[in-house]
Image (cartoon, rainbow, N blue to C red; front, side, top):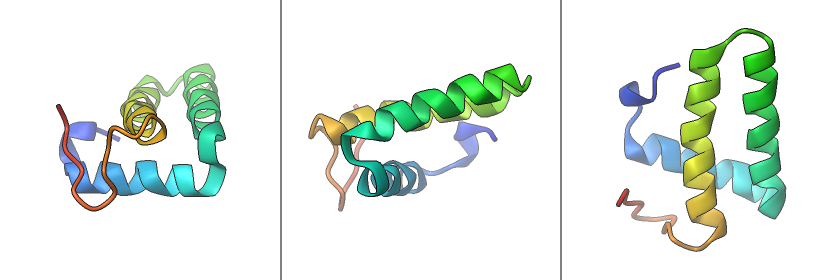
Amino acid sequence: MRLDNLKVNSLATIAWALFDAHGDKALGVADKAIYDLETEGMPMAADAWRGVKSMVEDVVLGRMDREQPTIH
């Protein structure tokens, strides 16, 4: 998966869904996905999850609005 093919709103939706499902543990879920994908030899997919994790961090820290996400 390439992040440049996804719109900000799509990434934000994924980040918020992960947060809604796992709360503050969403960062750990993202870390595990990154680790598992790297272990399986899927570096591009792991990179995509790094992008999602970055947005989840913004959600957890209250830096990203659910309705109008922006990337700074």
